[in-house]
Length: 225
Image 1 (tube, rainbow, N blue to C red):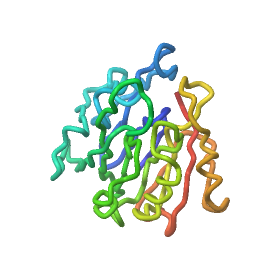
Image 2 (cartoon, helix red, strand yellow):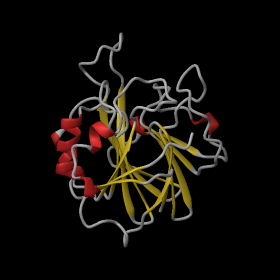
Image 3 (cartoon, helix red, strand yellow):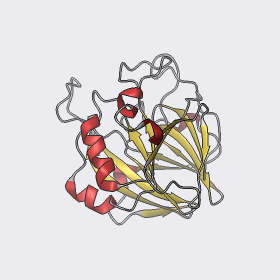
Image 4 (tube, rainbow, N blue to C red):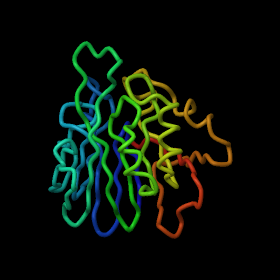
């Protein structure tokens, strides 16, 4: 499976002859300030349809099927042969957005036999029932590490310990190009032993079931947009 980091919470994951793009932001200086993706996908999965930093598929080319994870039923769905399950969550219940918090969802999908969990835009600790359902069922976690209105790092660490993914790839952290004033990725990585963290130095990474690390490893990818 090939993984490419665009920006914020947006990745392209390719395997089994399919390409999945996650949580596409709205590009341009009035919103994210990130450049458009401008690359094709077969499937776009969004953690909600209401957050401009997570739900704008207009700059994904090709003819992708767009999935709003909030609308995925509990039993899951298959889209173009890719199984997708969703876990319903909320934005932060304590952060002052100046409005009521919106619903969003984490989502789990499988490509090339690698199980990927994108934790959406969750703003609270993971629910015990979600931890139980996901424990031992995740190979790669795409994890929010910018704090502030998203999950606190202590709660994220607890979720990682409970779910036990073999790989964590940070997302949704401070970018000099981006407009959000959130925490840098080092606030997260410094909590783990140095030999469990790799700053890849580029935007792409390839993983297979055979090359997944035996124990937790964190790969920090470079933003490409």
